[in-house]
Length: 480
Image (cartoon, rainbow, N blue to C red; front, side, top):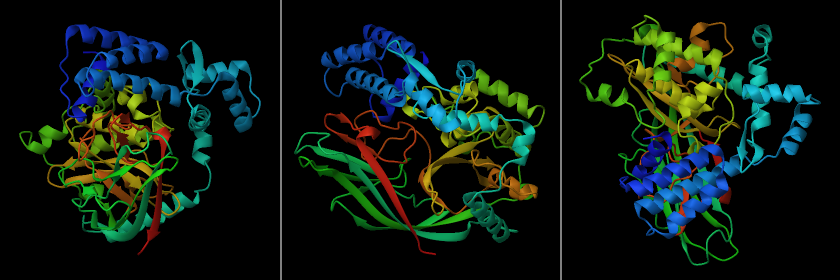
């Protein structure tokens, strides 16, 4: 099965659909996947529409066709900047430039574009990403000099040194921070016909995590709601609401919770030989296609970095530091249009927090080191954002948090500098305990974000409602 086939199979399994279809239909799917790879989006939409018309709504064939059409539409949304527009953006952000310079940036992949329906179209964050990459790949000396830490970095260093101090001699969660959150999803007016029901899933703090407790729902915009059980991979509050003509559909929850930081002194971490017959080892060293991917490229890279080292602590540190020198943070394409995120990161040498975490986890699992996904939000004052990280399992110690995408901290002390290799701050909202889970209750259509869950999901009986049709907002009050 090709990557598109694996990708679609994973998406359908998330929706509770079987994936077996006839050979004739698979031939059409293969044809559409080639059209997608070639950027022939109009043909993809036409073919997918034909397949949808010849299949019953809700059938496997209908859902595959619908998913392919949505992927094509999402590619067009991400790559919506024309060549004239990108030139103007570069001039505004960096000043004048030559045609030769622009060609070099494109050849390096710093200025990302695709040929869509015969036109050269640029990623909507291409210019900002290019500037980040130019800065990262500047001379070594320039990078060493750097700039004074900004307010966010300084706050983070002060906070994490406090977590380290309170954790001295123990590994328990420490430095509690209590927060009250108002989370709102607002669906644009008239996205669906009047009187139709919109289904909405909002992110909700997990209550089964040792670093997160005292979870309490304080208010909900709809009197009828469903909170997912702890067994759900993605923690949600589900609501429904009928549409009123000309009016936005607003879904809102208010809740409080307490979050704690945690730090493990690397020197004190026990790392015994793994019990390879255990459920933890078997589950968390396995491949989870398409995005936790133990490909030959991933294995080769991880092997080359680990060398002859067998101690998991040393292997993790080697790979962690390799990321700091080789994979800068950059704004991401929507995950739903990337069938193999680890491959994308390796090819393009960049990625946001989730993309880096998918590759990091794939590399560790290829080395026989158990690692599991965790994600939700980072919620420090004035810097809240979607965020992904993970936890590494060491036999004899247990699960240890690791955040691969946070920079090394500006400290001369190695333990403070590398804090996020074996520690995590208290300013987190944990929503997800894995990837690619089914929502509760199940979502019918292809999700806006099929692997992670941070912003929320929205649909109606006629299909998914994508991110471009609704907004999300988080307001935070720090209680302690």
